[in-house]
Length: 120
Length: 108
Image (cartoon, rainbow over all chains, first blue to last red; front, side, top):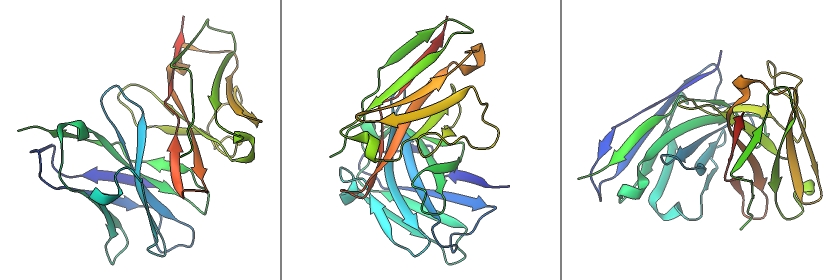
């Protein structure tokens, strides 16, 4: 059974850096073709893709947010961490992590999401 | 950058057929994936590679893709189908994931 779970602060202040962790099980980020991505959704808005890290540590970022994002995985390859710098109230959103499997280019399993509010 | 365009809303009576479109430049040359998102829940993949249904997705849900439009079709619509639906592609030219703006399906 594949599970993903997002964790991190629920409230951050403007200009602070956000760090979110995706802890997953049921698959390995060492398996060829597997990736873990981050997607966010502002209240009442559409899904917005943020970043993706692959089994070989290759990474992709949303062009509009690339300068603010970092994505890493831990050595055990059961966690992926997304950091976003210089947080602003417009970054208030539910942040999801999701698995991309086997060069598929779609997300076949999602976490439940974590709501992050940016406010002073 | 590649843009996917969806109608904000689609309404359909129970038992009828709902069609949700996703427009993009020559989208027929790309693989389109669809997600269903019910209120307060994470998205769920309902169609991959234009027309493939993951395990557990009813046959009433189908997809097609040609030219500049991909379509998600839900036959014999039920109240439980009421949700937001998003299309998604991989844009090879920019190496990024692209989501459509989403369509709210209302069952009358």
